[in-house]
Image (cartoon, rainbow, N blue to C red):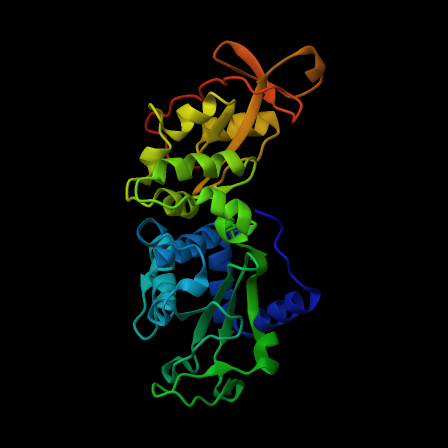
Length: 327
């Protein structure tokens, strides 16, 4: 994950808010102890957006294609998925108990669009936002006060935080990197070359995805959308006509978020896949003109990350994975 992007003003206001509220400070320190870099939080948000898009069934990759009811449901899914990831205790008045303190969770795709129920006034809220178009997300804590809220006109009387009071939010992570939705950000011409139309084209789409997007993280959501089947991982496994086997003949390897694969990618100088990600990269057998290039031993030969001028040649197998879980 890239370094978190805190503005000086946001950092100062976060420290001031925490210093004035002992419970907020406890919750803040507890959350940061569970997830110091924000990588777990970011993965939950990426998975939740992909869950809503449901690419394996719909072929969707763009938030704009969601129905309004699905967008409304996003807040509930974020709340549930964070609950599962961090195993928070159930709240009595609010969604969670974090460090023994009642905390409500509110999500909005739009920054500042959190809908605060009247019963949250006086309580801490965990305010979360994720923008798939900017590939960024934020999460912060705020003790809700009535005079900091806009008066709502909706039937359930939910309110929003006034813009002039948002500086009071104690940011845990502000404008941090959201794992990229690669299909969304591709040039349309390349995307159309990957997302080949047709019912039985799932395998071809997955192969084209990893052929055209190299040395860059590809999330599970993109693979599911390309495969358009529940057992999308079958498209990646070794076997006649499957992605790893077909692309290896072109020298392209597909590394997953497993320690052995990550180590090989790291030693070659390739992009290293993280949780929920895969990375393809082309290799070439070590030759004299590759002097001083980092190399790895696979299948009894030395390999380097291929340069554009290197001829395509069949590559080696990556190590088999037996009972290994994602790192």
